[in-house]
Length: 257
Image (cartoon, rainbow, N blue to C red; front, side, top):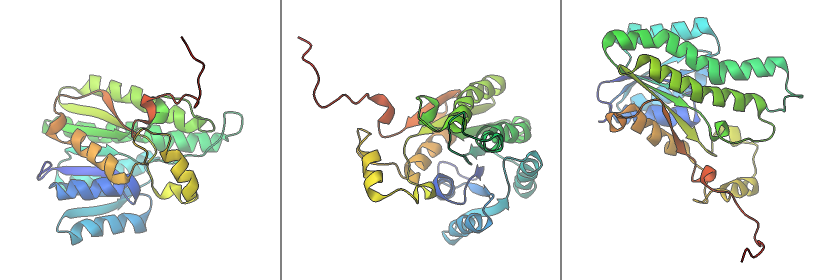
């Protein structure tokens, strides 16, 4: 019961990392506000928590829209009167290089992957300050550390989240702690078009030789949301199977002797 009787708001909770985190937080005692633009998936997440004797309710919200973010935070406060934990996890992106991606796709990616976290903080941190404490967990990406082809907008957004993490942590410490998770390759619904052979090829890029599961990231979120990480703020936690820790060399290298 690491989160006993605490209220946690989780965005992008209709599936994948958000759903796994919502379910884990509920098992650890949290009352969970399930937020997503996908009503069917969000209701399923909330129902799965209630079926396991947990407490949860769903709020449909597009976190790329300020009015809907305000409504989401207010719904949580109206229901429970407080908000101890936020996991800003929602994502939406369009692939493309700078010369290929449209302005609309750029704006949507930045709104959901970066601006949404600021909007949630803008609306929720005042309540955390008033109640005397809170924890903010953000889902970033290892793409904020290294360049990947064809992900211009997504990488810009995820890179911005690292800077935003440090800014929020500096501004609201010691009352509110703010940290970011940087997942590597994690199998979610976004992988539906990826073949088994391609998945295996991706898995072999990391030292642990497997792709991550949503539950792997949920465990990291639990660590950052709980008192286990009480001396951490303004930093990031890489959860990528070792992907960013190595540079793969060719099978045969010239003899350096």
